[in-house]
Image 1: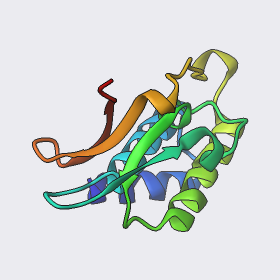
Image 2: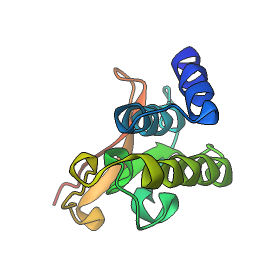
Image 3: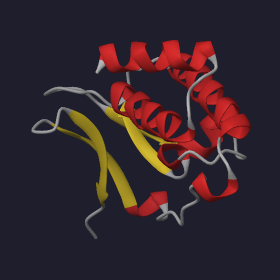
Length: 124
């Protein structure tokens, strides 16, 4: 994943990334910060707010779970950079918007099989 992120970063810096590559980069960024293993704690993050409310990258549309030890400031900086690039590159039909579940109905957990923090429904 790091190699693909670095390749994607090189494309973004060179200015030749297309919207699909930016969408993939956003997904990879979230997955990178959501990495976890047994014993790790995860937290819920408002990805739309973190990336900036006026973005059209699918990975940043709703709430998500990231590792509680992840550097949120670094994540925010990278997410906003991607969102800004998408605002220049993505055409109206390439943008993604989503209806999101109420985050109060979800809890962040580490899925050790996936090695990722995920949101799962709270038990009532």
